[in-house]
Length: 339
Image 1 (cartoon, rainbow, N blue to C red):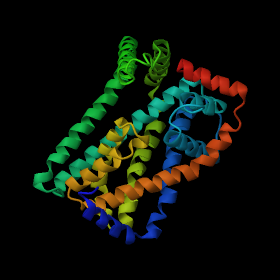
Image 2: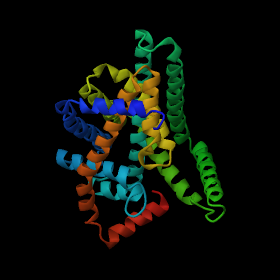
Image 3: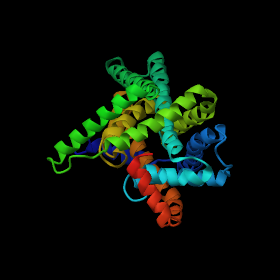
């Protein structure tokens, strides 16, 4: 920040000239994005004919609630897998189905996000929008995107093979416990129980095998997942447009792919810090003024965070207020067993 203090000052200038009317477009844009996220879950359940009918209001409410939970309440208490399973139970989803839908949601959106990144890379390469000395960044991001897509495909292949999944379950559990033991200097020797991970993986395998036999049930979730991924990136484009730079969509797509990958591995809430720095850095490497890139990324992240809290906190609190002793015990049992 100190070395880039002049660029940060430029970023403040960009913020001073932001078109507020365009920024307000983020309200319907974000609401529709959350609607798409909810449709990933409910369209899958409806295709299986397991779900009860849900109104658009309830769909939006649950989507905003789960979005808040994912960002603000990442673990502990009534959050996590047990909470999600409990929340979907009144709509006809079992705990195992809720687990699978969550994995499916991230698989679809990750694949779609990286696929649109490759399209953006092709556009930047063909149009010559990136200086020759900076085209290395397109290659780096391209390799990252292909690797992530390969991981999604590889994960799907493992999930479809019970023996491979069993091996992956044991390997992951041992590795996780080894890392936790090393980090805590032996004070905590077991972060994950093998039985819990095995139960979770086998439930995922069962639902994956069913979806593979009846691929029709995946058509609508994939459609809504593609829309969700596009509008997630479009959030940055709206902010860039409000600053007078609507031409930055390809650069934003490429940079957001890197930010999302780093944000997933950096141990801070939502990948804060690393996400913003990497995204702004990639946009700068692709020829965008660093002050503009910083203003777009930081402004968007702040707006999204505030929107997440404002839109989801009340719904989340209202939902957990209904949890009684039996429901809480059920959630804790699901968290313990991992299904």
